[in-house]
Length: 294
Image (cartoon, rainbow, N blue to C red; front, side, top):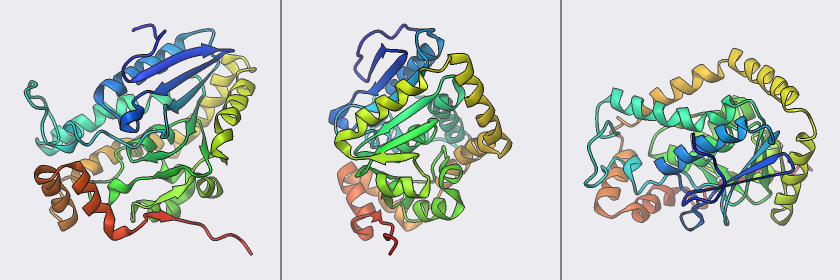
């Protein structure tokens, strides 16, 4: 396993005061996820979990966004990988698709599986695959104006890794996924999708203060607290649901409905920008806002 000591093309890793900070580092691409980034993220999380000078971990995104999702311009779009060797992909059978989603899930579920607590610091866009990462963390702190949601649910499939139910309950999970609407960090905190929100300019300080407070506790005790609560989530079916989510997403990819068919056609004929525009334009701004109590 590589020892993460410096910034790579997709990730940065540093440790100070018993807190490891892992930062997604493709700000020009809104930290969109690639296979290389996910592999490096998994390795970095295991590195932090192994190090005795780390008690807590912060997962953040460089630049304006936490993570805008998967890089749809690559293999995830189902358009192949150019001149690279042929492997199982979303172009293949249902089982090929399930297999690929499960392999990706092994990396994106790492925040749940490692022993040390992981705090997500969410700003800007936290969409689609970005929620796969954030909602698997032990705590999520978001900027008040962050945008959190799964717009891909409008035409691309269902979340292949789904913790919405466990954070905000069945009705809000359905409300967000059945429309693909995003919700602000402030409102996400009100419905329990994230733990709390803070003004964008204060977000890093709020997360740092929380991480350093958590890191005062012995790592063994933190692990005990995390694992017993996660065992409770497993007893509620959280791990089994992740496998079912991946398989259901693969089945959703077989849809020949007009919205999914149009998206695939737009990707092939016009590219990502047009595909996203045509997918999202009927939904307007695309956000859902809670009414303030009177």
